[in-house]
Length: 295
Image 1 (cartoon, rainbow, N blue to C red):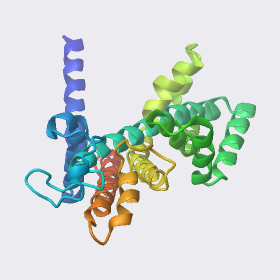
Image 2: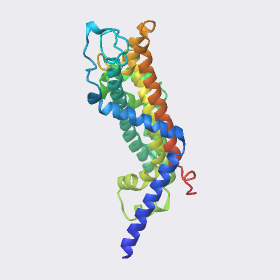
Image 3: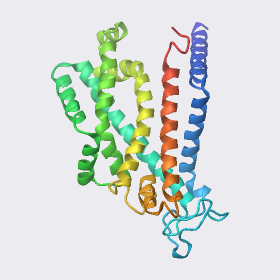
Image 4: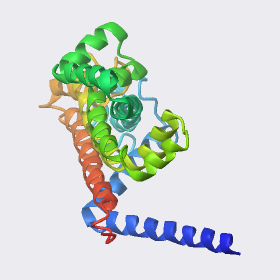
């Protein structure tokens, strides 16, 4: 009976924490709007093939530069492709690249940062010196060099954009882990003979993950912005794959007679990045125990 009561208490505590998290996170209307915007972009990306009947890469020479109509809500581009369709499929490309790059950078950076903090000594020195060397090189220069070596497909671009952001995760998690590895509960687990990696992943990481979650949310936005910039200058996503950056690059040539070609994808990039940043601020507030009334 006592065990059952303990389990019930734990469940009640988890529900209360979840309730406070959600209440704090969505206490501001801007965060609600931002979260709604992110969800809309995600749904558009997932159900792109159902939402629009057009193929984003199919050209139609007889339908070039059509004005917005019931058939083509935002008109067509210089190849007769439906602009709205390409915007929807462009959201899929941007989100895949942004999320995949952040996940890759986070996994590698968190693991290296934990190792640097927990083992210290030569391990810490080597990891930190390498990360500082990588941080000293401008992100765009690293991306350009890696694209020339790896390529510019969607998966390649995710790797290219992940590598320059790894040092940020290393430094973030290292600082958190250094303060946690000397705590009593970690010492107690170590005295019981637990494996080093078990201690890092099971007892240190869960207590240091909050700032990493906030960082990941905000990094998705900056990574999408970087991907769009690379595609704009012609070294990102290859034509004819629908990408907001390539759409802006192509549309800049027709700003006078068909401005929507460049304005629409530019607005999409701005909206998604702003929504992700505001949502990241909301998550940061929700993870702060002082704002949840726990301190």
